[in-house]
Image 1 (cartoon, protein in one colour):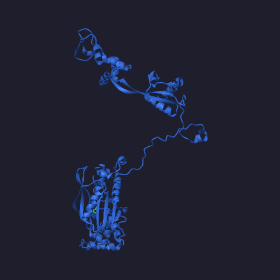
Image 2 (tube, rainbow, N blue to C red; image 1 turned 90 degrees about the vertical axis):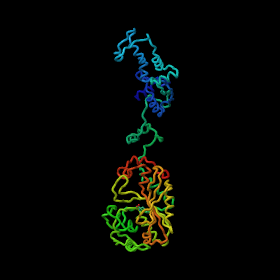
Image 3 (tube, rainbow, N blue to C red; image 1 turned 30 degrees about the vertical axis):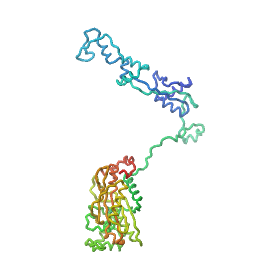
Length: 472
Ligand code: PHE
């Protein structure tokens, strides 16, 4: 054990003044494990009780089989020995069934055995011979290590343990005055920290946020999950009969079930655009009910916030061209599957300026997606109640080698901007996409439930790398 070895080393040093070679140390007549010796020496060294140097040598050692052969002879020689001298031979029962074996020669020379014995006894052999034996797995080269040891300045026959704790008793008894304390090891590696780790969605969100900030966008205040149907649907010229306003698609609040903060005049203008039209539009020509607009819901898209921001912009005495973005959570009454959850995150951007065109929207989208490493874009006509024209955005993903849908976009309708009070020369281009989709692609997650919710693997969250969109 360690204590025995430590004792042996200290006693030997005390008696002889030094240990030339620790391989000479014997416990019960057997050489000691030099790995254990090293451990003991390291410990004694930190207490300055010894000083040691490491000696190293490569050595040929016998394998188990080599050892057996060195002792009992080669397998062939063993068989030869079993066969009696003379010409009748023997039944092989002693060796193996169904053969008769006779000696053809009177004696054999067991070279392998001789060679192995030489190796065993530490005698030099030709390198070629050793290689041949190694090929037969009878010997192996191994590094041997041993040590030469001398006394250190604090040499003593026993290691007295240094105190590590300044206890209450030690202070009271004044024992600390004579005690020796272990020094602090400021180089010790600390415990791995168990701090917080950013969820992949947050990492990707941060990247998108930087893309927008680099492009001069201002973040919208999206810190409200509850929204009125008014801002979520009506201000966006979404008819009250639209199926997405159904409880099948939208979560309605029980309490408070409705809101009462809608600006009265704007509410009136919104009612008009729906019922009779205006700003060059015929409207939906359907009855528009205030109670319906006041119903509280969990917002189904962040465009509800865009709408409020544009309304605020319209209330300014002088219109100021603006670029807004948001990345936040939205809720839909979805049937859950591998790619759908009832809550997810939307990324949304909009630009309000004089006389923007579809060309501006396309240019903006190209610039935006270029920053995510997507340079090949395609646009497909689409429909949104609040944009005209509308386009779905597809990007060619080199990694997946296919076109994937990356977003939805459009030019906000005059039916939306007019009632807010925005100048008719002001155009607003906008686009939206989910945060989950690029995150799933980026981190190779195929089931959204492994990304978001109670099935998320926390170890994964800890070990996932930071997100860099340029390598998406
Ligand atoms: N609100 C849209 C959606 O939920 C995205 C969008 C935003 C589309 C802005 C056009 C303009 O998918």
